[in-house]
Image (cartoon, rainbow, N blue to C red):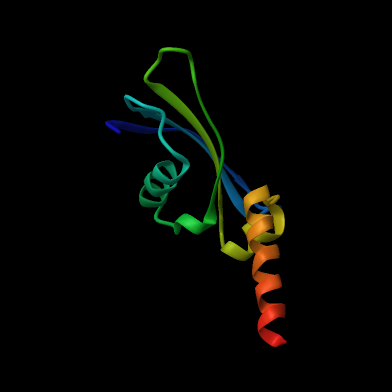
Length: 103
């Protein structure tokens, strides 16, 4: 990813987060993990405190617009953000394993 610039940054004290839009110039669509790493380096925060909302671009373009929320702490993110299906299944599986270990 060659270019990385901040388009907008808005502080939201109610949800204890910063809402940012960044522009990225890359040859292929960046993954969520790559974008989280870039944002964490730029804003000096941990990757687990970042929630990527959207990665979009125009067809055939190498410019991508990323919308993300940067939370003050992981606990704030955990309280506010909806969990994905994968995260819910992982929590459910961990609970079932804990029950089988108790027996």
